[in-house]
Amino acid sequence: MSKEPIRVAVTGAAGNIGYALLFRIASGAMFGPDQPVALNLIEIPPALDALKGVCMELDDCAFPLLKDVVATTDLDEGFKDVNWALLVGSVPRKDGMERADLLGINGKVFTGQGKAIAANAASDVRVLVVGNPCNTNCLIAMNNAEGVPNDRFFAMTMLDENRAKTQLAQKAGVDVTEVTNMTIWGNHSATQYPDFYSAQIGGKSAADVIGDESWLKETFIPTVQKRGAAIIKARGASSAASAANGIVDSVRRLTTPTPAGDTFSMCLCSDGSYDTPEGLIISFPCRSNGSEIEIVQDVELNDFSREKFDASVKELAEERDAVKDLI
Ligand SMILES: NC(=O)C1=CN([C@@H]2O[C@H](COP(=O)(O)OP(=O)(O)OC[C@H]3O[C@@H](n4cnc5c(N)ncnc54)[C@H](O)[C@@H]3O)[C@@H](O)[C@H]2O)C=CC1
Ligand SMILES: O=C([O-])CC(=O)C(=O)O
Image (cartoon, rainbow, N blue to C red):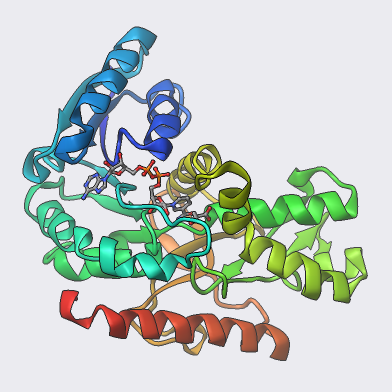
């Protein structure tokens, strides 16, 4: 018997990330080669013509797994019966801005989307927020989605994790697959802490394998923290293909069992783990059993790591205070 399609909403579907993402979902990269999918593409009215063009291109791929495409500017129609909501649509930052500078422009988008998800989505809906600042936009969506459990909401630090893995692999001269347990702690912002002490290369601490703490502290950390800004400077536009890849990886990591001994980075609603304030959307080391996600509890934070993580969590608390009228 053929499987029911997984229905996936993508907001900002005609944007740069959308254009790099939809074809990978439809090809089976997100849910596997045997899983049919349906796409609900959500845009704002000025982008509707561009969205029609994207739909024509999806048709022109004749993807065997793609069973239905809905293109709409209506949130109720867009989130109807969706199993996944990938909230990408929002304004990207420009050169010289921090992601939190977007809160005033983007934050309010996520109140209406949270409400529409609660009113229309399938009972098993899961939400991944990508539009920046993604942690606090996720907090807004979660707090407006009455009746949807908090543990269904995620924001993305997978792109940061992938960036960090490659930096460590290149420095150590090993294949990127050798790097595991690469935790990004905190906020998807310039305060995030890519933890090279608990990351492993070939099963050993990355800090020991690389053996150059000043490079790790003074080059590696800022390179990962400021990679988004470096891409904007180089490309004149923010990361899009690598962000779309991060979305595919995030959903795969959430929906497939995590290999023994490994962890992945995901921003989710804090339950107070690692002495953080409950209710903030914080990036932690996580594991999945294919359906449920747990925050891994026994990762050691030394004084340096603790200080970095605390600074990022403090920033998240400040972002929350700045949007208190929306949550
Ligand atoms: N969390 C992460 O790791 C990353 C996050 N981002 C963020 O993703 C967002 C999207 O980036 P791009 O696709 O490059 O931007 P883009 O400007 O190319 O596309 C955004 C699309 O969203 C649409 N949009 C705007 N408001 C909307 C709304 N209320 N409802 C539905 N659609 C709406 C626009 O019409 C546009 O088509 C930005 O906020 C960017 O900063 C980008 C890279 C990585
Ligand atoms: O830096 C930006 O504004 C886009 C983004 O989130 C990233 O590339 O990590």
